[in-house]
Image 1 (spheres, rainbow, N blue to C red):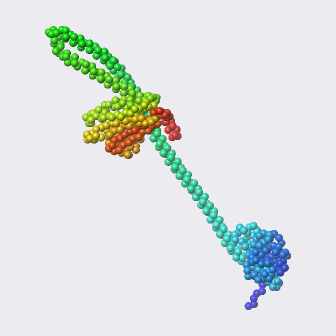
Image 2 (tube, rainbow, N blue to C red):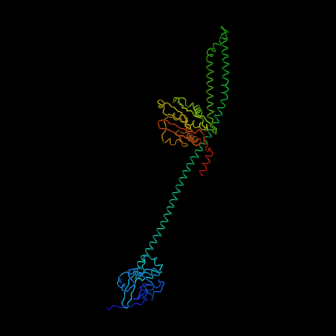
Image 3 (tube, rainbow, N blue to C red):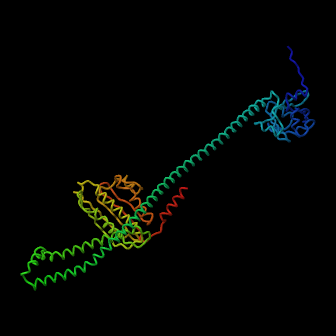
Length: 482
């Protein structure tokens, strides 16, 4: 079969190769593809090749001979007007003597077509660049979708992290608020307990002061008349002795019988002893009344110079009956090591309350120990005071059984007690701690080990530092809880 000889018109050839160029040996462009003519801003036909394009590859001069030698090389042309690069092949024809450039734009991504006004449909279907551009376009679309998805995931991650942070912040805030409310409740309980106890002690102070006053009046009357009674009795005894000296026996029968019944000699010997015991009893009552009056400062709210030793002694006097021996144990010994203390600016009534709580607790601790322990370790309470610069130190210790670390850690908690129901409220040490630390800017701590007793230490400044009153403290607690 003979080969078919086909001839393509320029229009048909332009459809097959929309970016082709044909120029003669004088470099005149005599034919050009439809698309390359459209995108070129200057008319191509009948104009010189080097007015529109330059050869970037291979590095040769624009001559037919040089082009012919590199026919099988890849040519890269660049538009001098738009900068668009064309990649293709140069084919030299002999009849007529022309050079045919067949190629297409050299692009690496679809977005580079837009500046030149090109679209994918401008390329020939058979052009491999189209497949590359379609693949590139699909890849770019996939990348765009991936980027969009990644952005959405990133945004969701940021939102999730933000939500988690908000949740964490809310949890932290809720936990802090719960702790604050819990502390507020504890403070309110302490304030309530302090107010109730203060009111009770104030009433007790007024009662004690009244009782002391009522006792003191008749005792003072008796004590004041004892001296006169002693003088009168002494005169009468002297008179009787004079009668006995100057009026000898025999006495009248009635007088003799009365002398035998009254045992005058014994009465004259015992009467001075009787008057002395009455004076001692009155002194004892006066000391008790003085202690009651000192302790009755519980109802005083003002700060005054206070003698620490007087406060302790008055407390011991009131608790004297508990220190004495009974059917279950011998007497509790109290050892006082008093230092040379100056007067301390403080609320004496409140400190007496602290001393009462500590000494009462020490007696309770000693009474709770086994009876056999009393045989080997008699109960003893030691009270030590000393001056320490601008402070005074007070230690009230007992040689009881001591306490565990767990008990010691909760010692000053309100309503905590190790005593049986009905014997302890759990407020004594808590209120004492508040009186020393909150109201007097002092320090209050306990040293104790199991089997080695307990020692409570109080450190007070010599000069009183004003602090909030109980009412102000309650108001602050209520405001803090809002």
